[in-house]
Picture 1 (cartoon, rainbow, N blue to C red):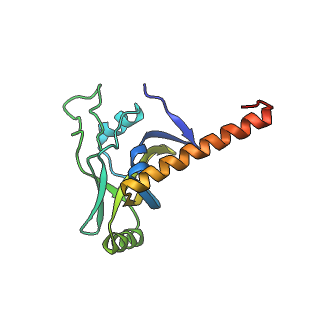
Picture 2: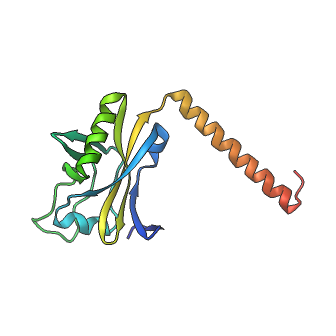
Picture 3: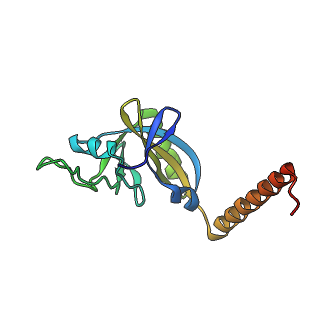
Length: 162
């Protein structure tokens, strides 16, 4: 069974760490997702992959594409297709504002996290703008500098001379 992380009362099934590296996340939305019978059982086993997933808005509805939920091992002929397109549940006002923001510029919808909340599967969807290579390098450099500063402060507090 996959390891489940607890965050504010919800179980994280899958997270897309690469999305935060490749994109600048401008805004996040919590959405519901429409699932078939064996998909929820597979998700409760902690199996899913958000690596190539993205969301689109077609005809006023939000769709999640390329989310990989493997077939349920104990399922039969009723198993689902692993990479089928799944509908996301948002309020009309949220969909309209998202559609406007996507039309404005070079932005996309990326799923950041898939988790269980009060027995229901939720998707944290991020409105993202792509990063350039120099932005990624700058973020890595900043993270390394922060880590070194924290390490040096810890050593100073403990009285270790370096």
